[in-house]
Length: 172
Figure (cartoon, rainbow, N blue to C red):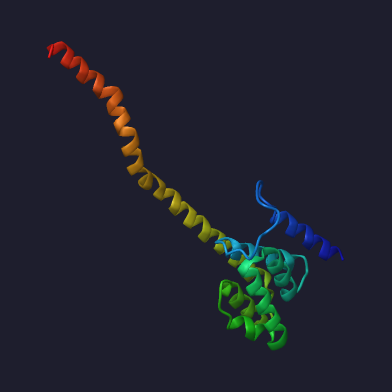
């Protein structure tokens, strides 16, 4: 009971709704880049709370929702019939990296916490690298509009008065 309450509180704290976001989702939402990292993180929290791999993955999938959550729930339904190790080891789709890691762990009988936590860290590092690359591209993409919008105004305010003054001195 205490483990379930702790896992529920941890899930709530990890996935708080950002300010201004709608409280009701309309229809299935597309998979976002951070969804797999969130799924791994929530699964690791469930594993830390003492849940089994299937229970932790099921709760995390229900919380993430969207295409990735539905896909994971489908994989877990198939795993209940065929077995977790063989279903997850050969799985494809959006969460393939997590499924393969869980499949390897289920086949070996080892703890799933370390591989899932490591995968979550790797995914967060990849997302951070992608965002850093996007931020580094911003000055280049903003250079063209900046020159088209600011340079004419700069010329109008600095060079035009000097040219008007020069023509005024020439009395033309």
